[in-house]
Amino acid sequence: MGSFFSAYPSSGSFNRTGVNLAAGAKTPLSAISAAFFLVIILAFVSPLAKHIPYVVIASLLLLVAWKLIDIKQIRHEFELGKGAWIPMIVTAIGTVTIALEWAILIGIFTSILMRKILGHSKKPVK
Image (tube, rainbow, N blue to C red):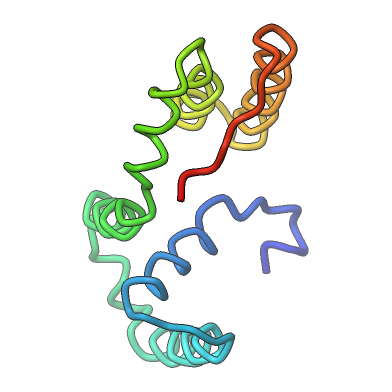
């Protein structure tokens, strides 16, 4: 429905990926299964959903998303030195303080600016 009203899905697929990752899903069939069960749940349980406090829903989303944070990559960013970690911090702060699309754009521009200033490229963590 969001497509008809210009909605911007900011965390739906992100958290679904976390659930699939935690469950060990490997194929697109997991997304089809999740959609099927979601329709069934919405059909029968949605009248009860109004009684769930928002803080509980937010906590569940945070718990699922927490497993997607790559601590090794964050450490690697700080080990690169010379401010290579600045785009990561700017983007992280932006995602919790401003609209998601603007936070991503600011992060991209910060990364481009830092590469111009520092003159190096990042190497991925193995």
